[in-house]
Image (cartoon, rainbow, N blue to C red; front, side, top):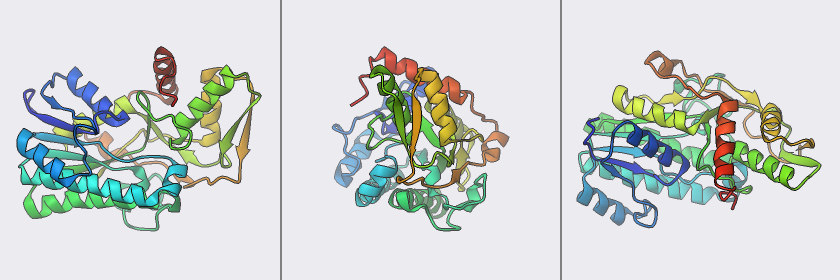
Length: 313
């Protein structure tokens, strides 16, 4: 990408989008289009069409999405399906109509089958049943991946897709009802410590294993792929390392400095037993994560403290 190129970061106010903006600015890209959801409703086709026609971006990072954890996905599946499909359909189609040079679509590792062979290779997509607790979100994201592939096939549009693993970090969502496991646990342990609680309750058995990537590492990977990857097949972004939810809880407990007990609520769903991405493909072309899980949790905790936990809404 040219340093003067006009770059549209869809979802620039979210955790992923804001990290991409920081990385672009740090790398010398200043001509950025970063409208918030009030300025541009990506679900509105007319608004998106007008935005592309007026601004004519050269490159697009599609990081906008309606996201949430197991609870939110269970309660609002229709919203997750509708809103995510509308966002990606509008952005991808109008990027094509306005001759965008390249677009990067970000999916999610939940698009892979529930019982995919571990670690999960990119060619596992569409080979088995999805995890029921986030099926609606996964179906929407699969549609976005396939859309990029078919626009490349039919129109030669340089649209690529990437599958990040579980993300966390600055500007994460810490809402206990709608967030993912790591930020939810971080908030629980911080509040338990501040309230002198005796225990922290954790959803599920603690046995499922998950992989976690610090969001600034993802941003670096996105910029790397935009400059170095042009294949129609999707590509995984992760660390290639995982740990159990119980191990994660113990690490966060230690980092926060909470002295109480852990209580696992087995009446709550575990979700997919294991979800570790095979990252050999992206490693082979020259990218590897830099921030360890412990370092990333410490960075996130420091950011929360600096903001007086104002993100706990």
